[in-house]
Length: 272
Image 1 (cartoon, helix red, strand yellow):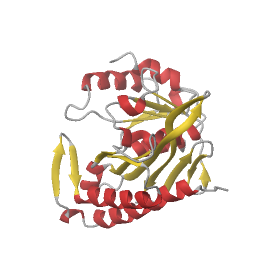
Image 2: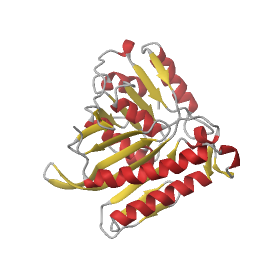
Image 3: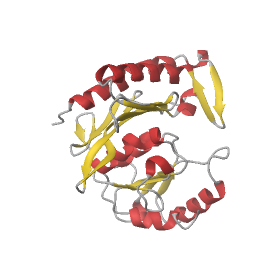
Image 4: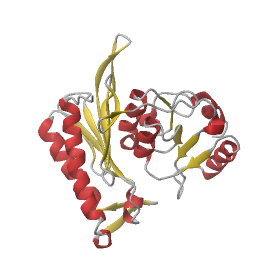
């Protein structure tokens, strides 16, 4: 049975509260005021309302933590090394086009002893899908869960039976020629490639065994912080496409069940 820590309860409460407001706004999407924030990147009243809700809830529980948020940027905290990494609405473009596939993503970064040294890493995370009321959550050393069900990555070992998720380059965010070469090569070897436009949920789906792997570049920390921990705690493996471990800063990510990681990476890394 899932036993949620006080930290997870704090994150889930904030995500669910924001998610209820997103669902209400999604039902009245034609009334939202929308402005462009950048190429293929839209921001709406819904983003800001959700982020305000999350910030207020998290600040009440841990006022010493800092924040790194999609809309408000970085806000230093009083306790060095501890911060919330928040995407109040991952899948904004889906949301604004009436596509019911989006989520809230919240990770917490903090101090931990790794190999005898004090390091900063993701300690807990929640990806909340308000449309289906699905809470994907993980805490370091406590496993990954979907509501009260334990998650495990898939056990597939061959590419021919694997379904892979990815992000599609749009309006100059990354090199479309590189992506096309990667997809062309993978298409000949895998059972399917899917693009749903919500990186945090894509990674949660790797943790749940729905996807066998997921890759994308030009991502932001708030897109992947919670997802990285979900995949790892579900028994999977996460790295940069070139094999590094600096995903939060580089924006390059390959998450998998671990069994096909090397095969996928060898294909993707050929094209840069």
